[in-house]
Amino acid sequence: MEDSHIIYGIHSVLEALKQNKDIEKINLLKGSDNPKLKEVEGLAKQQTVKVSYVPIQKFKKFENVNHQGVVAFSSQIAYQDFESTVEAVLVSKESPLFLLLDGITDVRNLGAILRTAECTGVDAVILPKNGSAQVNNETIKTSAGAAFNISICKVDHLKDAIFYLKSSGIQLVAVTEKTEHSIFDLNLSQPTALIMGGEGDGIQQSILKMVDQKGKLPLLGEIESLNVSVACGVVLYETVRQRLKP
Image 1: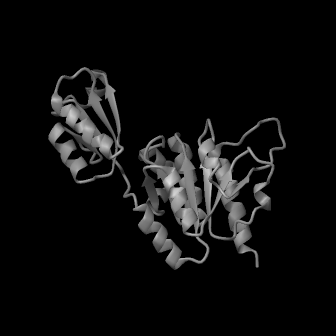
Image 2: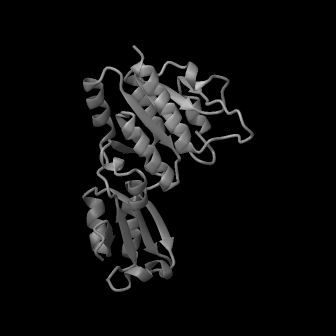
C-alpha cells in the first residue's frame, strides 16, 4: 500500500505498538484463529487503542498485500504530550486558552473546530483517546490545514485533564444548554479551558459536575441547538472579543 498511514501485517503492527506510534485504530479479522491477533489486541488495549474485529470484506482493499488479518491506521498528525504542552503554555502566556472536546465524533465537525481554534489563538485542543473522531484526511481538509498548526493532545480520560488544568489555575467552562447563565456573562479573559460536548449527548454529566462555570448560547428560533462547530466558533470569538477589549 502507498498510504504511509496504513500499517499491515502482524509483526509490523506489533512493532508499531511497541514503539508507541500514534495508532488511531486497528482492524482485526473476525473469526481468525491466529493467536498472534490476540497479542495485538492485548497490546493495543494496554495503550487504549481502538480495536475492531471486522469481516473479510473490510480487507478487500488490502488483498494484494500480506496483511495477515491485521491493519492499523496511524495518525496523520503528531499528537503533543498533554502535561508538557500545558506547562509550556503556562510559562509563555499570561492568559492561556484551551479547548476540550467531549465526544465529538464527526470528522468534519472536528476539522471545522480545529480551523476556528487555530484562528482564535487556542493554545491546545484536548481530545479523549476513545470516543472521538479521528484526525484523518477529511478532518485535515475541513480544517484547511489548521490541524498541522495547532497543538492537539490526546488523553486517556478527559477527567484527568480537567483535574490537571484546575490544579494549574485554569478555570473550566462548560458550554451547555443545561444552565441559566449566558456565555456572554462569563469572564473568559482569564486563563480558561472551554469544554464542548458531542453532537448527540453533549457534555457528560460527570464532567459537568467538575467545571467551574457553565454558559449557554441564546437561541431565539424554533431549533433547540446549534451545530457544535458553529457553537464552538461563536464561543471562541466571544472569548477573543473579551480579550481584545481595552
